[in-house]
Length: 515
Image (cartoon, rainbow, N blue to C red; front, side, top):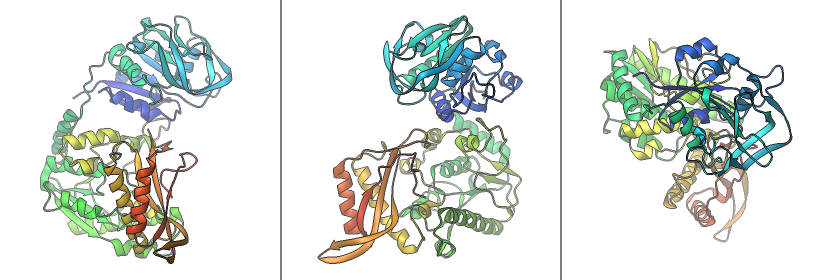
């Protein structure tokens, strides 16, 4: 099925993926391209609308990212956001200058043109997220100012006749209270999109496409148990049944009971028609990681060892025709296909593929989806909720949630502590409202007193963050009584721990994970 298309042209903005996600939430398909994309390619794609992202530059500087005036003369609706708005004005004959003071953070915007199609259903006074050094001092000919703030005379402008719209603030971020309405107005009303992008039709189309591609061939899938690989595996199972073999490498660095949970869903007693192979490689990994403390070295060992184990199992199976990857759209964008980097993604995933597995082609059924869309597809496929909404989990697993050397004993400690933490978060009804949360094991040991006896044990650090795009994050405000209960249970139930700490660090300066 041919989909309606909105194009996001990326000028180096940190929210490029978020803009695309917001468009998708309007049930309209959207892709991200670099501002360097040739205009003839844009014409060939025949988009219903174009959105220009923010960026860190000043549009009036000679070497700043720009685009030809022709873009605004195609008859296709264009929405410029922040830098994109300034660039639109600059190219079309307006004036952009450095502001006396930077406007940053939540700002009250006053709507001047209440009949603007962008502001339909938006309150006359609304809170928006500003982040700019420059400002539009003079709108381009044919444009009308549609809103302002106390310090910004032009918070938005439009040339409705030519379907050109400029917004100085960021409607894509949640801090802009009615930003979703504004983007919906542009996509569905100005661009006249019907909203034909739905997960039920996506699933049906993918199953049919996989059947046609695979025919009677054999397919191999590396199953991690995470959301992406699980949804990819179920899609393939629905399409081709036992022509699919899933290899699940249990490296001993999973969360408590996670290996058994994966096997219960995908193994011989599960509901899906496929061949399931579980490789218990815990001791092999612990041996490779012995004495290694440097974080990047641990990551490299865990990644390389996975590929070696997977290769060994693939050789036992024999010739396969296709290899399945759970690549999703953010992976594609970040590896160069979309966005500001115009490098075309080669036929390997970001972590690398086995060198010695003979296959004709890679199947990436989820490469067009964002994470929230993958979850929706999983629900459409009937995958259990606990697996669909599983917390994000890094490829190296608990190896990067253990500071210093990884040992079987340390893995046990962090597994037990993390299980308690996750259980109590769920009991408090917070499991769906926190972006990501987990327990990590520090390398700090300290003196404690338990049962009138001196202890010298490890400290557990609890982490919980809320984030929109995982590029920035703020520590979640978990009620003290919940934290206190978690602390009490961990110290009483997990051998080898006598302190529990809560990490308040935002990203930046910290990271979401520990290593």
